[in-house]
Image (cartoon, rainbow over all chains, first blue to last red):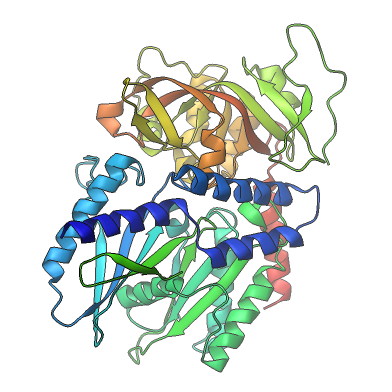
Length: 292
Length: 220
């Protein structure tokens, strides 16, 4: 199992230190858009330099190395218990090496034992598929952006948001307004329409596995994604809330079934320091391919 | 563009002279904010001013603010009078010689300290709060009344900002609160930030919120 553990440490290192190419491209594009000589442009330049430095030094892009979320597509018969053990050891070793901050606190006692391993940390989502490959995707999601996530139950009278796509639009844009710069924008939204309170957020986060350029295959959701992106960038919130043209880099929305009584819109916000990488592992647990 | 500070002083109080910094736009003149951070210096600053901070700063975030607000005492060696609090939970490693090395140190979201910050500014004579995301009315009022500014650093820029930390002088409450929540005493040099709440009652956060709210209303 050592090869697996080493592969997962390398996945963690790279996720923490190297922003995916698609996100970097979106940030560079937004830098072009901002007016020269503004604080917004300056902030994006610092961001650009930070991305290069983190990669060069192999150190965390952001000191908040976030919630550790593994998404594993695995063949039928994979020993998930052994995989989870390897992931926990990889997390402990990555923390010692400084790829991850000592970032996990006992909610009752307030004690941070410095390992990043405990109830709920790391989180692993397993999904079986009929292929021999193991695909492991990792998202490290910081607390600043997690705190500005929001869940709306429609109808919402205050927002005049009904149970339709226009109501969803109002709820999502309200989340952007409320977030201002607190989620370290320019950010990317993952949204789920429907589900229950738990699955709504869960599916909203899965949207972060899509690349920035990926277009929604459902026409009405694609239209909503583009509309929210354009509208949010007209609000003038800008990078870090300093004012400016780039408030969001992308919007990703999915819809899942709901109960007749419930209509949730769950919005997760991902900061510009978008840490998401993925690997395909061979049967020995070695990395055969990077996915982003 | 920001207004230039008048003539560069050459005497003792030469801490507010502008220089150019390549990590910000070449067009923007950075105001040098150098310790001691006196009330006169911070009262000169205004919303929108980009600054570079040089001197000693103490980190303090959720656990420290709650502790101080509840009447806890600062550990011996920590003084916040004419000082700067940095809302930050850094990644710090010990090298083979036993020296601390900061490997990532960007700001954390400041609004969580809103219930505590005003009192701490008043009680301890704090002149600057570095963080991200801005703070609310109570903190802005305390900044005005007691002479303190909010200095917004770029969130997530942990590497650029860690490079500005020249030395770890000490750490306090490491066992009590854990590494991210401890009080780290850093010597920083040319640490870049923007004044977003000043001592004159202005807040960039309030302005941007109001403007974006109005823009959104037109588009619903």
